[in-house]
Image (cartoon, rainbow, N blue to C red; front, side, top):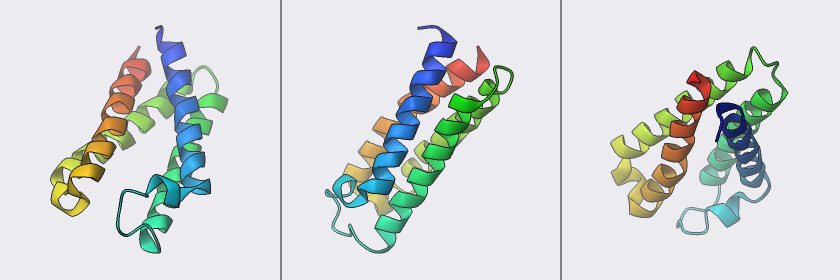
Length: 115
């Protein structure tokens, strides 16, 4: 997959995931005991971040796409590191889910943003 296609795929995925976090946070949080209040708000906050980063990459000029993709990779890398550092607070299921989403997105973002 060429870097441009990878960047666009990640951006579309980020917008779709972010939108689902905004629209149906309780569905995404169904595996947690605290799927209300602050957790729902936090889910929506992450959703907003992902929609903005994805939409930014999709609408950026050719000269600016790599910046948006790189910032997305930085955010995803930070999510993965935070999940590892605070894995006891997240618990095994949310840690695994976070890593399963953040690591491939970060890896793809770094590859696409640097190519």
